[in-house]
Amino acid sequence: MQPAVMHTIATAPQPEGLFAELMSHAAGLPNDELFAQMIASQTAGIGALPPGLGLDEEVFAALLARHFPNMQLVIRRTAPGSKERELEYENVRALILEHRAERDVSEIWMAEIVTTACMANDHLWQDLGLHARRYLTQLMTENFPTLAAKNDKDMKWKKFLYKQLCEKEDIRICRSPSCEICVDYPKCFGPEE
Image (cartoon, rainbow, N blue to C red; front, top):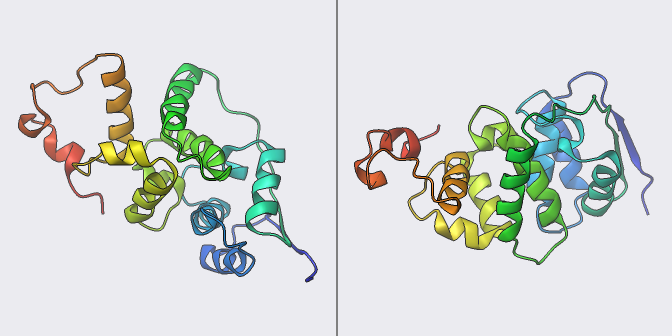
């Protein structure tokens, strides 16, 4: 058994180096690579996730212990965010959790992290600190397959999630009876790169 590797995040490390280090300790579980991308990006100041990916310190420690055994990161938590969007947060989180694959506990952690990133302002894959949009599609497909299957037009994920919430409440977000003829179609379905 190797001794634990201890990293203290004081200055922003290079995301590639931390990503490689995390992957060298990966347990071979679902979401290892995705968590490694998000952790490495967040510690380098990339994306919108707060320290610990928005998880409580104990939950983040459990995530690290399970997915990257023998590696420890010391994450300096900041004060909790504003509660002004708490209802929105809970609605998005509930929607995502309704569609869990129920194959791994990391799906619950992933729902929390994705919901936290939904509160930011960029494309969801960027707010999560993922390397490319395809990793977000992988994340959604593996963790929330029935929700991912509904995105059969490849709509941008954050817009798709909010559209699902609106449809659940019978609120139409397109000004036209069909997304395909809506004037905002290119904004919702266009490329994100």
